Length: 297
Image (cartoon, rainbow, N blue to C red; front, side, top):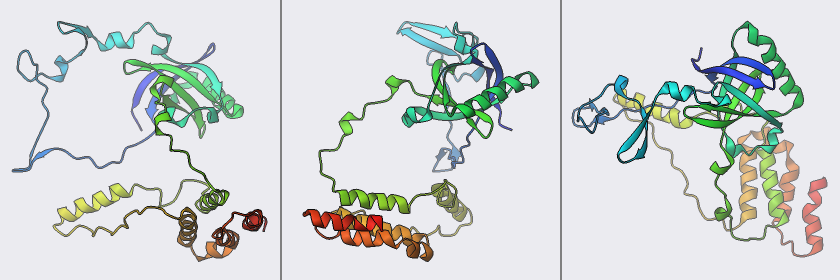
């Protein structure tokens, strides 16, 4: 059972839902410590007071705001938890919007919201069912960890999930990253769509959606522990410059089909014909029509 990160309530108009907040995700990354390579002694970071020159214990450490070089304002955890904000004790629902209207760049970590006792069961279930029927998500405000945040509240398997959100001014404009003007041929777009169709999935289940980096790292650790050679590093082809975009798209489609098995190759012959036709110059109107012909086949 995950530990409770925060306890409070969801404020939905005059309806209050007491909840506990728990992390909805887990981190399975391999963790390393720092060691002195000469004798493999553990290297640790010690907290030292720069005035007294001695190591201090965690119980002696608190937060402070540097007003100036000569003045620091101490701030206690109790003061932070009792800020004069309605969002300090509750997750305030401000609006309901379609999920598609929210830029994914603004969505952050996810947390499960569990009802706090029997008294919260009915209003919690009411909010779950209302959100589900509305096909919308709730935009909220809440104050955690020394700052007020925006949140996105949605339903997952009859449980409320809160995602932290970035404020609008925290998203950088991508204008400076725009590519230079180029012309894209309709055949190239069709080729990209054919590749997308070949790689389409109904969900994200499957062995290809696993953390192979952690798997490889664990193999190296196990090999070194057993004093044997680590697994051989596979030879990867160097990425080259794409000179013929259509040829690269066609080859990618064929490679993706082949990786799915022989059955998929025979079941999807139409795109293969279309990509063959696209190799011909398509400057004249008649040529363009012939290139699109397999689309209706």
